[in-house]
Image 1: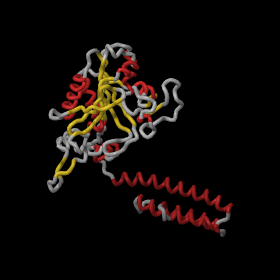
Image 2 (image 1 turned 120 degrees about the vertical axis):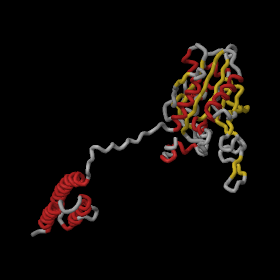
Image 3 (image 1 turned 180 degrees about the vertical axis):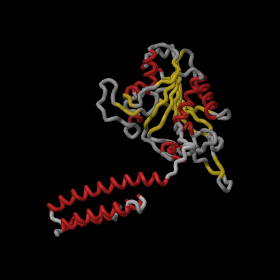
Image 4 (image 1 turned 45 degrees about the horizontal axis):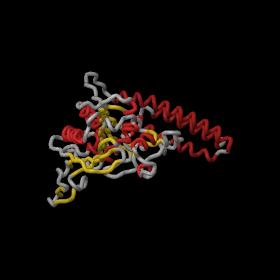
Length: 354
């Protein structure tokens, strides 16, 4: 008997042995014994190396057929084996399906939307991938502005528009300002809220390369800084609680004049700038370091931006503000989140707390 015939016979014997044992062992044991990594089938297949080239082809077909028969019989037996082990009590209540919930950032966006809807803001949606004109040029930013540097902004590998310039991932939601002014075509007032994803080349405990920002824009006659500060105070107390303080500090943004940075009091250190360690020693607050947490910018809409949107700055004025949803959420009372990257970590233990 040739080596080839001996191996074929061994394969037939192996299958007969499998059929004899199929009712004597459970399905898991059979799977390991016959089809496991060191099982009888692999031991037989390893002997193919002693055959000639032509015999290897023929025996390979024999092996495939044998494996298919083993797997088919084993699958049938597994169903029978499982059914025999499981007692089904049809009177038992079903297993309750786990119900998910909105991501904490989505929850924050819904809450922010409701807060501003109460004072007449209308939620709008504008592109997250937009042209340079709406992201920079129409917002009074010159061509050499640092924000247009590739170290700050993600540029899309796309042919530039002849009049609107390069395509970018929006660095802020302010690209919606001129788009909203174009949409209303001179019909006032504007009370617009734009909430969207933004992208910047920053990553630390208070920044991520992708984040969410909400943008407020108001344009009408006789609008002034008091309206802006009152809106910020209203949001601070509604979102963070009645004891939350807000402040605006003079700053410089190309699309507002005057411009301000907006700070809210830190909830972790209660606005003091320090916390106590386990030994009750005062240490600097890791989250704010000063008692205040900067969340974004605000200011009166620059005359050049009003002009780009088709409005006469001698007749109309407006204010705008925009800051991060994630950074605002970290200031929520008793959350104690000191790293916004946790929101996108995929850590279920963290997300299930919300």
